[in-house]
Image (cartoon, rainbow, N blue to C red; front, side):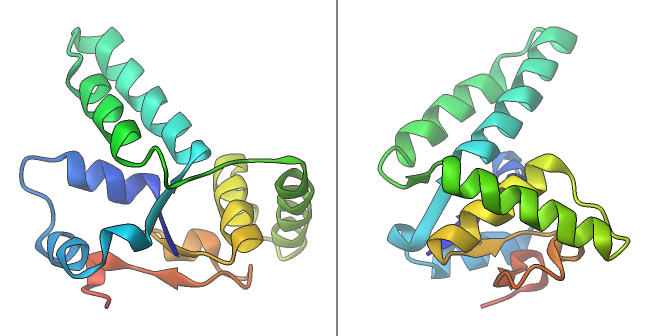
Length: 140
């Protein structure tokens, strides 16, 4: 199980995504790829910002398509994940490396479900015992 981080989905929305990412996506079985509701929230925020700024609904339409594609492969935030999120944030703060609330939520969802996180921002998730892969570096 591999959860796709927001930056990976955003890259795939581009007309010419990074070649490493495109290759990684082609090589990874679709059934191994998951989203979580926190990533959908972040994508929705970005799509809404673009709509308000430019009037373009391009990303809103893409987000709707993504939600359909992943409708049976979506991991959710739940009470157990909420407790884990708090512990992760406290651990990182204790290390002198605070983590944003959305990143802590994504990390907790992955840890709770035993999933790997595919992200460009691996440093944002270090020190959490989370399995990470960076498709931007041509990771397998």
